[in-house]
Image 1 (cartoon, helix red, strand yellow):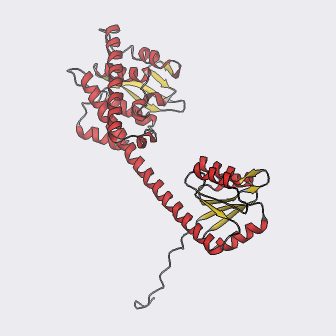
Image 2: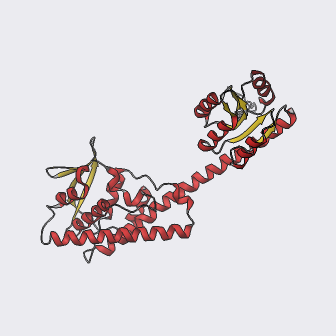
Length: 337
């Protein structure tokens, strides 16, 4: 039995992992010298050519914080590697170092944003360590900033989908007529089954007022297209039941839909989710407007199309429509997305 007065030593939390620096230089002695000097600050990866540096960079970009490259190397200049990193991994802090006075290349690299700092050889070790400490701190700030942007994007994406679901409900309510039988649940159930990818990050590139304006015009254009298709269907199929539903779907989706008896197989799930997931600057397709118009046409007759996933795609069957949607039900649907 352990004495209650005894205290086992608390386990210390693991030490944080060191950041990683990639240093590229064709001189083996320079690589060893750099590694010894910087090892207390960071893990150091090394390469002896631009091509090898590119390979190591591509393989380890997720953990490299700082890239340091010598300028003059056989086959290619170091600023080519820094430009390569700038294009593909802009969050990595880039530093150019050389023993030669090559102002033209250096100024060009600085002006193009390819490098953060230029360090002249031979190095002063204390100054080199200070420069790299600052570069690592900048890399950490960039990483934290990128994480905040990712979190902001996720929030924006959820807001985008929620706002679009609200717009979808308003659109359907304006077109459903006095019956108030709305196909919103049928549409959202199909979208959920198909899988919705939130809108792309162009949401972060727009001012909020511009974003709301763009979304309003997009929804209005979509609504006008749906209304037009619904009017055409009602005109061409006046007085008929829901039997032509699969014929209408075939006309809308073409080869991406296969009809088999009393069911239809959707081969391209993305065509069922366009309004919810495409970027704000992308117009919704004719096929998708027809899709919602067909659901509205069915809803007016008390029917819906229910989808289930199969190995080939999404299987759709006609079923009696669900009761009218309540605010709580709509909120629950929004939570699903």
